[in-house]
Length: 447
Image (cartoon, rainbow, N blue to C red; front, side, top):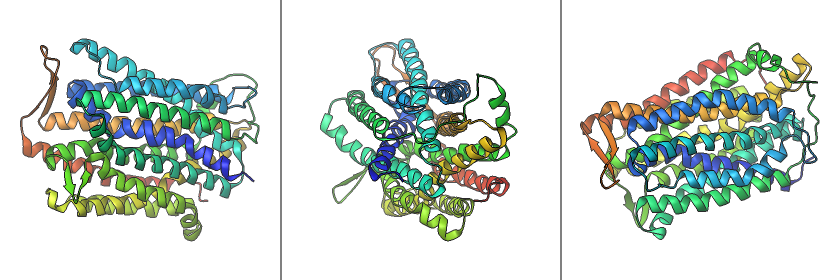
C-alpha cells in the first residue's frame, strides 16, 4: 500500500509537466509566438506541425529506451531525477525573445521548440510509465491517476490565475514579462519533477525483452485496445487544445481586452483558471464516480457527452463582455467532464499495458505510455497549429517590423476572425467530443 507522500510526489510530477510547462505551452504559446515573439501565423503553425512529426519518432523511441533502462534508481525514475533541470532551463529559454532579426528569431524558435519537445518526452514518457510499476492494484492506480490530475489542475489553477498579476508585478514590455515568468515557472517545473523522482517507488519489475527489437512496435498495431485508446487520447487533447490555444485570441478580438469585474482581472489565463479549479475537484472524484456508474468506460462516456453539450451551448452565448459570467459558468460545466475523464485516460493506459503484457509475454509499459504522451502533444500542438492557420485564413496576419523588430498584427476581416475564434472555442471541440463517444463504443476493455 503506497503512502500518501508517494501519491503526492507522483502528483507533483504532473503539477510540473501538466500544470506549468504544458499548460503554458498550450494556452500561451500560439498567442506568444504570433503577437509577441514576432513569428508569422504561417511560421507558428508550421513550427507546431513540424514538432508533431518529430514526436512520431521520439515518443515511441523514448518509450522503448525507458523500458530497457536499468539503474540503482529504477527503470523510469532516473529520467525524472536527471531530466528535471534541463526541462526547466529549456522551457525558460523558449519564453525569451532574443534581439535578432526575423530569420534569427525563426531559427531560435524552431531550435528551442524542438529541443523542448525532446526534453519533455525524455521526462514525461517515463513519468507516465511509472504508474505501471508502482502498483498492480486497479483501485490504487485510479488513486495515483487522480493525484496526478489533481496536481496538474491545482498547479494549472495557480499558474493561470497568477499570470496576469505577475505580469503587472514584473512590468516592462510583454516580451520582458514572458521572459521573467519563463525563468520563474521553469524553476518550479524543475523542482516538481525532481521531487516526483525522489518520492516515488518502483515496486514491480518490468518483464523485459532480452534484446531490442521492432516486435513491440509491430505488436502495438495488433493491440485493438491500444489503437482505440490512442485515438481517444488524441481527441481529448484536440478538445482541450482548441480551447486553450484560442482563449487568448478570444479575449483579444472578441472581448476587446481584459474584463475587470469588481477588481478581478479576467484575462484569458484567469478565464481558463476557473476550469482548472473544477477539473482539480472532479479529478479527485473520478474514482468514486467510476465506481458509481460501474466502469471507467461508462464514466468516460458520460463525461464526454457533458463536454459535447456544453461546448455547443457556448456558441450561442452573446459575444459581449456583459455575458462574461455566463461564459465562465459554461467553462465550469465543461470542466466537470474534463476533470472526470482526464485521470481515467491514464488509468486505462495502464489497463492496456497489462493487456499487452498478458498477450505478448513481455512488458511494453513505457512504449504504451509513450503513445499517451504522444497523443497529448499531438492533439495539443496540432490543434494549436490549426488555430493559427485557421485564424490566418479568416483574416489575422502577423509579422515582425524589419526596422524596429516590433510585432505587427493586422486584421483584414474582423467579423470573420471573431466568428472563427468563437467556433474554435465551441463547435470544433463539440465535434471532437462526439467523436470520442463513437470511439468509446469501439474500445473493447470494459472495466
